[in-house]
Image (cartoon, rainbow, N blue to C red; front, side):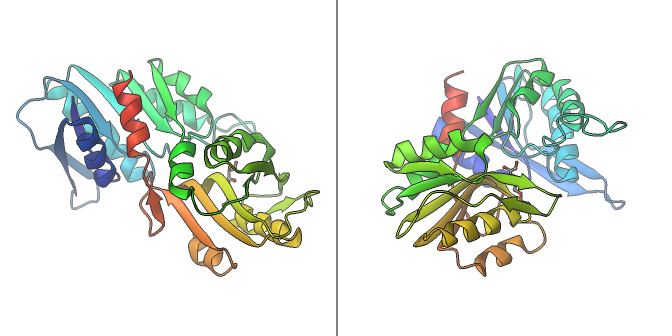
Amino acid sequence: MIVVGGSSSKTLATEISSLLKCDYVNAINQNFPDGECYVRIDAESMDDDVVIIQNTYPNNNLIEMLLLEDAVMSLGARTITLVIPYFGYARQDKVFKLGEPESAKVISQCLAARCNRVITVDIHKESTLKYFGCPYKDVKAADAIADYLKNRGIDVVISPDIGAVDRAKRVAERINASYDYIEKVRLSGTEVIMKPSKSNYRGKNILIVDDMITTGGTIITAAKQLRDSGAKSITVACTHGLFINDALNRLKSNNLHEIFASNTLTTSVSKISVASSIAIALKEW
Ligand code: R5P
């Protein structure tokens, strides 16, 4: 097996290749003077099972992934497995309003033209992956989050959304804490309201776990609810830390104990590595 690290995921790719004890091949990424993407794989031939690790967000990373697939194929790859730590466009997974595209399907079908298998991490909806038309796995970051945060005295793991309570349950069970959820209602892209929690969290150390933080609105609103219910401290962990528009600073100024993200995206708080979960998924295929 050969691992190729795209520009979004070089550190994660090196970590995965060393866990799998397989070769790591660098992909050179540059821009043409007009801004178009240029890639080149630093290898003579790739007559092997090749794994490309690269996000499809933001747009230039998506283009890079498409070009890497073709470069790897032209070097003779036997099979191509895409590892997409953060799958951009996954949230537009249906036509919400007449006239919209089904973006997740479009992107999956474009990438599918040159790959044999796909691995994502906490993709918005796993069913999106059926559009690849090839075997797929969605790795869950919950175990890595739990292992990183064990022994920190967390009493309760909270999901800021009833639909994602299984993630909180999985983390809680691994760190011997209890779990719960808050009911969220999204008013717009940036505004959410939470129904007051009926639980009493007086004196409890809380961990809020979410799949992604974008504007930070969900976490800030959830933290307020939890504080109003008596929480002693609030730690936050997410899989994908997008932290748009100064979201990280907004979160930091909201009296949160600590904020962590996984390394699907690279930020100053991406301390939790999903490398071993991805390596296991690759090895067990
Ligand atoms: C929603 O479905 C997700 O699980 C996250 O809660 C949401 O995307 C977070 O967005 P924001 O940080 O903008 O509230």
